[in-house]
Length: 487
Ligand code: ADP
Image 1: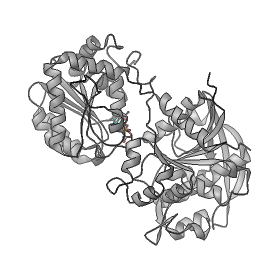
Image 2: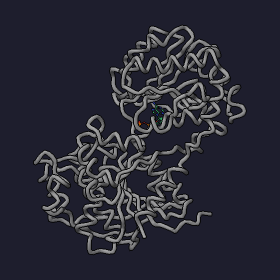
Image 3: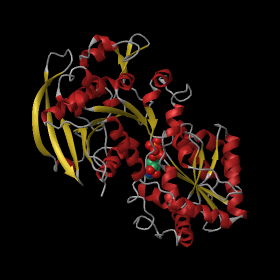
Image 4: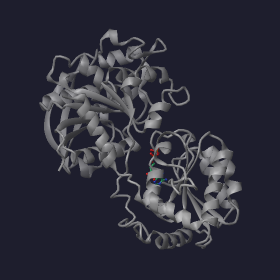
């Protein structure tokens, strides 16, 4: 039983597992409310009712009410429906309007997405008022919900909602909702005094919705402490570094967790052999052989298997990986890549497979079951990202007793402690600068331990499986943040 004071929190964001998900944001919007629910937080999640949400969820939604809302200088009143779905103690309220939320995908192009999320942000606040549910905290996620703090402190300042505090979480700084000032003024109707360089305007003629939200929210969080520091530098700041430095007093980083029910080697139905910390070594051998058979690799439990599971984009450090592959394939090492993305990487990995049959496998696909089998069978998992706000692959890997080899950036740096041979401590192998040689050195250090000091390697497997990568710790930090900004 949690005895901390009760707090009510409205999550506002553009995606949430299992209804609609394109990335890590969708996982957080699902898992964090569940974890907070157990910590005396009353959470309501507000989402767009996209047409593309699967019918089985649409069928479970219950009509909660409707009203009409004006929007910017459009001169029109827009329909706002509220459809509700309650699941595992969490209330999901879907904002309904077919004009904005039709289509096969949640996101399309900025021409459509800018009005869509301006409408959504304002409608979310209006829906809270309509339902007379006044939360202690309004927790907004990414640029799509970033106008909420601005609407709240302008058009809604005389409403009951004005007592709510706001948090804006950065999951992905790359997308910011930037468009010309005229368009954003037209759709939002926000007052002229917000269109200045301290709040919404950038480069004189554009308005940046994320930038405005970061100015007006009470607290900013991002998904790891290291990334919170990195985004204040030009290398990672996506042109908002000066703005973030200015607001650094209210900025902090809170690491994500993973769903330890979904990623549980003891009960994972997708694995050949299930295991816990006591049976990991023997089960991993069985899983390795099964994976080698499944992928047409040479079946040999003595080979070291390196896995890489990733979207195949520049962010993930694949140019480094590509350039060292020939040096990794030494006759004792096998490589398994699972991912889809940019054609140049897909083609390169297919070519490596063609040239190295039996020791290199390129699975150019999105396949969760196969991902789980790779986590359970590989000896090490490679994550050489150029930048990584939090990163989940290294957390999944550790949960499955697979040693992560990562670049020291963002959440990778915060979650993978480098192996220290003198103290027999650490969870994996790391390298700092974004250089192929350093990545190769880190893998070679791992290989050296694997092939020459297997007892030390096995101890690290157990340390990794013991590491707490659940949402619970992170949710506590969010809960404490809610408490600290509310009376
Ligand atoms: P991203 O930047 O893509 O959100 P994360 O590391 O935060 O990266 O999360 C990636 C998640 O997606 C991990 O759980 C990983 O296992 C999963 N994943 C990535 N690519 C694939 C794939 N091709 N098939 C199955 N799962 C994948």
